[in-house]
Amino acid sequence: MLEYIKGQIVELTPTELVLDNHGVGYSILISLQTYEAFQGKSETTAYIHHYIREDEELYYGFATKDERELFRLLISVSGIGVASARMMLSTLTSEEIRQAILAEDVNKIKSVKGIGLKSAQRLVLELKDKVVKGEGSAETSLFKADSNALVEEATTALVMLGFTKANIAKVMPVILKENPSAKVEDIIKAALKRL
Image 1 (cartoon, helix red, strand yellow):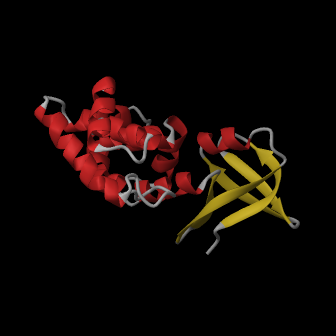
Image 2: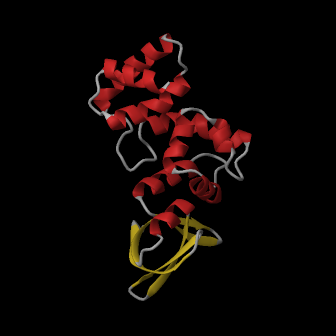
């Protein structure tokens, strides 16, 4: 199985990349996110998802492992194929997709061409817990294990103050990213400023 292909960029369009690796040209399908990351470069490394079906064999390439992991998570949902997942990654950033799933923002997900209401609802239903656990991310976990209890405690307090879990889920990753060693009271204060 291919992990990545490193080589010279021969051709780069918003949907496709041709990489020359020791005289072999690889045609790799990419998202708009990856296209933007590769613009202006003469050499690059594309992290590969090898897609094989009876009648076709394709390479999907990504600028980061993080984007590839999210792509793999998206295609694990029934009804979301490789084309839909690539369209999602071209329309929204990886972080926007994760935030939409955590916040159960069906309308944002539905704004992607080819994703209907039922598919958007299924994405949220099947992936919310996985995204919280850090699946679909190159990082091991969205929240450190020891901060899970703190996050739960802060979330409970904020719910009691009248905020919805969906809105709280939107701000928690931002707060913990800015201050990973925050105490419960720090998390609540920071959340109150953002909610």
